Image (cartoon, rainbow, N blue to C red; front, side, top):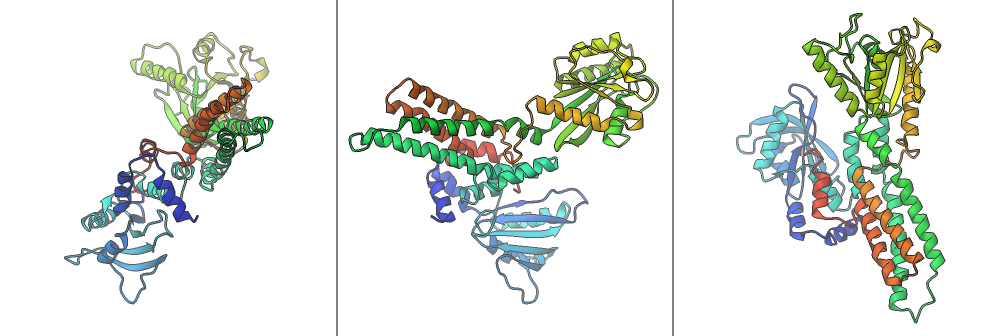
Length: 478
């Protein structure tokens, strides 16, 4: 079976309305495929996909000279109004005939000048010529329906577009290359083989040798172990996609803003010798160990009659409560105080690193602190000292909190984790059924559940609501 036949059979087997699918694929769609920023950007792309895409392009695009309209060839020319012949933009046209395109349909791209007006005008002309404005993610949805991508690859495309660190981009590329789909398909194939063996014994018990129960148990254990291994990457995947939120808290004037500035290598926060300088939460985006980190420099926490500072202190407390990791900063020159203890008691339920700052002014070994604090770092933020140790400790805290998986190629998302969890539970129930020596018919019930859950990950088992939930998160032009 070739790829086109696989895509067709996949569509025919969907447990959704075929009329919805056929109407979806029967129309030519158009959308702006690049970010549009007023007066910025050198190139803007309008993309069309569908059986009328090339006809619309021929109507709107004038290629001077003797340029050949061939697939995967770039033409130079002008986008013109089909009736008035007014030139809308000087552009390039890229032709991609089916099935050698992103959607496996005829695809046309107008490469216009950047900005709002050129692409908006070209898009409007495409719509007037019969194209329909694409829904969010509809180009990628068509690629999936036509068998070019599976669901894991489609989701990896969204992850790649939204990646916020090199590690996140690499994990998305691994998914796009099928490094998640391949093991999932193999696990599902193993479960299907086991199911076939069991059902054969149910239907033709007298004609076949007895089922090798020990072999079935061994295969199920291997599948379950692999499912558990892949599930362990869920937290890593979530970190790579959403990042880590880190709140810097402490008394006024302990060096929180200096720490943020040294860490981000910028003057992000105002630094003075006056307590209470920071009145609001200041954010900075960093990357630590390949993980996106949102750092929140908060106002110094203390009792105050200043109404503005009081609001800042309350926001600091909320930021600390919502952070994935808290950096509690104290001064080496003053040591641990009653005020530090009060702040610590408010955040000790969160993962916490104690940062002893201003160690260039006083030896750190003279500072006492609660013995149950696990991670301690010494810094002299004003001198840019201790930042590498801080990042190393943050990675250690993440690792020891089981948030970092060793296999970067497998970083599943929440939907995939939920399906894998259902598969794991079903496999465990099959094991329990076997252990209780129940009839073979009972073995097949939960085994089918595991097969369905694994199929939902790659798209062998899918519903209209599932597709809508996945692709509605995409941008319109993708």
